[in-house]
Image (cartoon, rainbow, N blue to C red; front, side, top):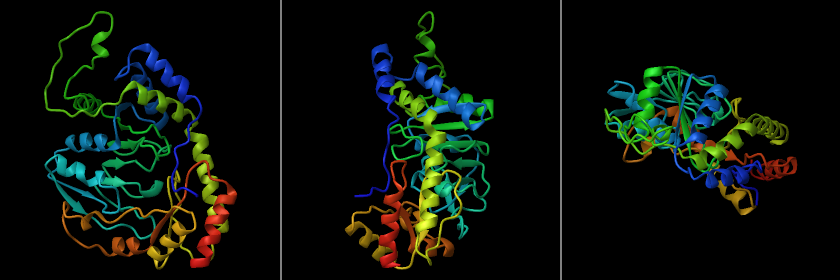
Length: 325
């Protein structure tokens, strides 16, 4: 079996988690603060707020803006648009660019498959692990299959101090000081709540894993680029290659009779994916039909991409594709 995605430990996580467990501080504490600072430095942002998911980061980000309607790509995971509905605002889907599979312009810009294309105000960076901060706010994913995996987790980055302070409070019920902050020197039980928040904070166990993975992220992304180059070399002629990715979170090709190819690969031990079914096809979202998105959805196929893949694995995937395409 050649898996689509795979979480690969660095080997340092076990000791890092043990240290947190023995410290007695398991929730939001010093490791979260350390990860926030190191991640902000890594992506080139002034402020970073660690969350329990990219979904939580997006939920917080849309609350920072006074928009009644947010534009977003329909070719994305549900969180990119459900965050708008959660905030009581309206979603408007805009069509994608047929090459990059990103939208040229959107309020919430999704960098699909790590493709650095298009402009936005909030950037959904779930596929952009290893890249740099963009826009007013960037929302990052550390979910188990992402380039920086922690099991679950995320981050909101910004250069705006007011947004950072408000987002930090909202991520922890609206409370302006965490328990860890109030436990320094002399414990203070008192705090302020100026608006209703969410339970969206990260904990120190997750942050400890994140610190280990962050250290290895650059070299892991080099390996992803190498794997992409193997696909470029061995894919049969006639297959539409992906737009150049900055992070190679996914390697997405376009093939005719996609479902037939998908089934054939699965029958022969290769797990592929389809990212994604357009969100407007789900009844919870506004119903529409966009031509570039419709055409892409009929053809897109995500090939295995993770740092444990070997060149022989890629050759086998491409050999099987050559039988069907």
